[in-house]
Length: 136
Image 1 (cartoon, helix red, strand yellow):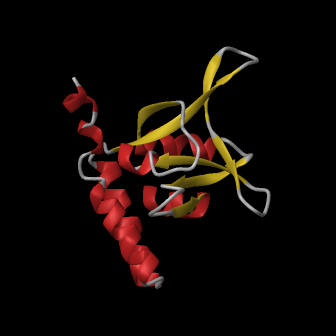
Image 2 (image 1 turned 90 degrees about the horizontal axis):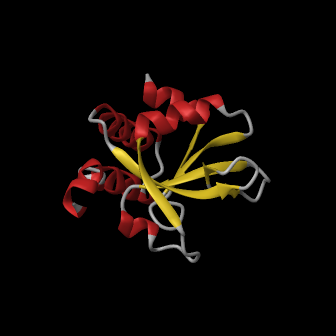
């Protein structure tokens, strides 16, 4: 069962490697490469791990939000369970979501700026502009 569950995460190490390279060499070329790697994973029906919390008003789950220093609200997601466990806070509930579905949802929610992938370690902030580029 566990093997099947993580199937959608296989290949995400390519995203982690691309982000790592981008952190070492923050150039337009490296950014373009990283976005291309994310697009490829999205087209392969790749998934990410998202953190959820109960929404008390309607008993539904909603994605956890992180606020950046500028006060903007972002969703966050992880390329692997290893990335998720690097954080200072214990994430209570997670589930796997298709990268493309997550991106589609972000573009629909005006108060969310985008998605931060791997907020604790190999981090990239994908604002709506970058998400539109990835989606093509």
